[in-house]
Structures are given as structure tokens and as C-alpha cells.
Image (tube, rainbow, N blue to C red; front, side, top):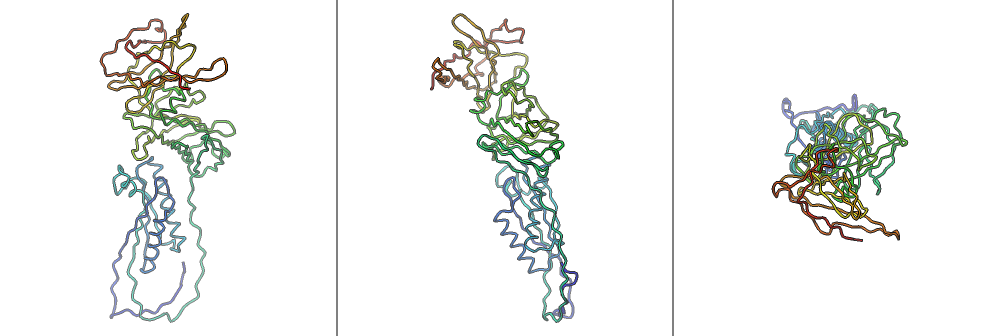
Length: 445
């Protein structure tokens, strides 16, 4: 920028001239999902912008940042800010004067297309570049005098705060240093993602070196294998996916306060609600609690997007769950011939959600042992029963036993035949399902 750069002697065609009306030209720089880096296509467009303003009398350049609707309002505001600043900094690097640049950001508030289709969301992830200009006046006489340029040092633009992005190792663990700037984004190996916004860690200036470990339960196989509880009080839950996070500083938990965002891949199940736990030491004994927050399903990501707010510790679990009906009454199934084993049972609903069953009582007999499991009865759905256990013989060889074939329980087949189990009356109102299919385990390895 020069206070006085050149002295021109201009001769305009005609006896006078009329002021030109200001005009404008628009470009749109598009971004990848959840990113604010300039793409190759975006760089090409911005080079085109610079070439254009060299040919006109540019009066202003407006930069307006936008996002699609995936993510919270606060997160999308921050993302659109970073996108706008990235375009501004790129133009500054190409020699555009900072005095011409005006920036604004709107998050997800001003979509130009739908947010349902992939194409629509792509068009919404944009920074609009609006160049306001007047055509250059025609010059018929060359420069006849030139003064020495006065050099003015430009102050550097405000640096964009970069988020801390962690890619966990094969064991879903990582160690890192955090300087309290930017969001912490943790990407687990099976697709789950956790975003801890800047400012959420309490006493952040004392944090320093952190370690994180994630247990990612986002598939039917992992949910069943983990035997993690799917209970909220006495209510059984259908889980579409869950995640357990253990974030510590020097082996100690860190307090957090704010809104946490989590993406959990899994099947689309209607009626899902966000559940939360701060107890992760023994997953089989977790008691999930409903927590105020938002949850929605993104068809493109094939994942539930959850936002939970409030005070919490950095060791927590978040679950996309649907409560089953039948509060105040427990349904039981009987499994015979346990032979000293405690088989693990689970049921999968037609929509793909999983409920891990819990053995609440074991009856010892002279020859056999009988276990009683709580069982969800879901109206108008067929439930697939899954089960297995490991048994080690006297030689130390371990064998796995699974249900011999897919077992279906059809809860839409009419009124249940049940029998009240009086010996469990101290634990609650339990009824044994009489028409439950027999379960037979077979050796698989």
C-alpha cells in the first residue's frame, strides 16, 4: 500500500467523462466436509479472481463463509470463520491488498441448496467471493512523472487457529500435548469421531501432556463381544452404537464443561435418544442415563451425530439408544444346562439395534444349572438371539461355543404366555416367558 505511488497525466476521450456505475462479479470456493483447507479447485478459482482484479478498478472484495448443517450451530460458526480466514490469507499471499478485503461468516444459517442430498450439502460448504469494481478508464498518454515509492510494512494477518486432530493408533490410543488453542478432534479407527471444543477443558492452562484411549463399540460384533451394559435403571435399551472415552492428564481425570460432539457410525434406528455415563471402569455395570442434548442421523455418513452439554469428567461414555417398553415388569428367559458356564446372550432387532442381556439369577441343581436372563419384548419386531461362551478344559485348551443356528423370537405372534417367578419377588415383578425357543450351543473351535 502506498501513500502516494504514481502521478499520472490522463487524457480521457471526449470533452468530459461520466462516473461509471459500480459492478460486481461472484465466485464460490467450495470445501471438503469438515475442512477449511483450500482445495486445488479452490486455488484455481482464487487465481482467477486475482487475474480479474488486475484488469479492473477494484473497490472491495467481500468474503462470506458458510457450512452445511452437520454439526452444532457453534461449531459451524467456527468452521465458517476458519474457511473465510483461509480464503483471505490465500488472497493476501497472492498480493491482494488487505484494505480491499472484508470478511463475514454465517455458519449454517444461509444455505443456498438443500442439506439433505450430498450435492446440496457440497454447495453449502462454501466461501462466496464478491468483487466490487469499476471498469478501468482508458489511458492515452503514458506516465510523464514518477515519484519514489514509499515503503510501508504490512502487519501480518491474524493467524488461523488450527484444530488439534488426533488419529488414534491400532489400539485406539494416543498421547499428545495441548496448548489450549483450537478444538481437539479425535478420530477412532472404525469411524467414530469426538470433538472437544476449545475452552471446554477446565483449568486448561494446567493440562499440558494428555493421553486418550477410546473403546469404539460401533458394530454389532463389538457391542456383543464387549458385553457392555445396555441398561438404564431397570429399562433395557436398544443400542445403535456407543463409545467410551478415557482422557487423562498424568493418569488423572480432567474436568470439562461445555458441549461435546460425537459421531457414532451405526444403523439408522428411529426414536434414538442420547444417553451418557461417567462410569467406564467396568462396562458390564454401566447404568446409562438420559442426558439433555441433540441427536440426528446423517444418511451420507451412516452415523448418529450427538451433542451433549454440561459438566462432566473426561472419562465418559455416549450411547445412541432407544428404550424398550414394559417398565415395572421384567420378562425373563430360562437357559438350561449351563454346565458351569455363563453364556453371553444378546438380541438384535429388525432395525439392527443390539441389546445385551444380563443374567440376574442362577439356580443350582444337582445335575444342571439354570440361568435367568432379562429379555426385551419389542412389539411388532422379530428379534435375532445371539449367544456364545468360552470353556477351558483340564488341559488348558479353550473352546468357543455358539448358538447352533440363527434363533428368532417373534414378539408379534400374539399375547405372551408368562409365569410369575415368585422366588425373585424381592428383586421386582419378573415373569418368565413360557414360549421362548430352546437354545442349544455348539462347539465352533
